[in-house]
Picture 1 (cartoon, rainbow, N blue to C red):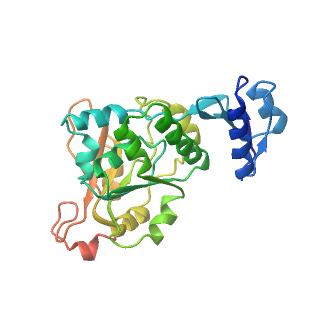
Picture 2 (cartoon, rainbow, N blue to C red):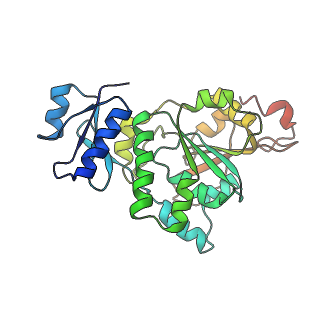
Picture 3 (cartoon, rainbow, N blue to C red):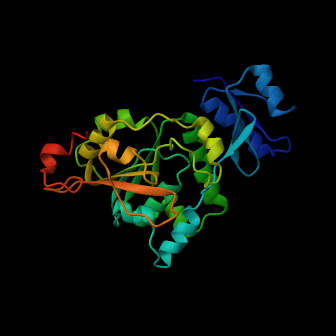
Length: 281
């Protein structure tokens, strides 16, 4: 475990103070009673980062940046789906009620929340996050959001997501064949697109390693129907990794690529899924 500090805001209530102490003890981290600035605490204890409990939320202080959980566009996307409007990710993933989804790059969980809403009762979303700080922030953020702001449908979606602090490479190697209906990747883009809340802060912590062909091959083995990759529009990653990019409208900054897991079909070619789906070149 890295050298993290746990503290509170300077106006925290007793309940918040106790919550912070409990979190520190559970994770074997040093709790520091707040008497000075976060920068001073960081310098004094040579901390990698600081988890800060406020009366409303938990945020992470790193490199003089406050990184907070936010549901991003998931709330508006769910409202749009409820009104019968399409969602590009949902369409690309071909999501159905009761599906079992593996989100390999969960981050703060916006896509996982939307996926969970669509799969509904009887479905489940596994969210993998390789960075402990982000996984911890997201777990706490889900609970805080469910208690304070989330609608009933959002709460149900949040509680169907199983957050796992694990690298997808390791997880996929051990995943059962055809266990998930859909496997989804949204890796950190090689070129930044500044259109999401808090993306710069999360970028400081995110695993920026490129997606490997081996990981994609293992994802295809673990998927029952489809593997989906989100990338910037016209990214060379689609062809490098064997995904068929879906068409996008003019001016759209992101694009989805698909590897279909159907007998006799792989990336639009007449080949046996059983023979070639596991080798993505």
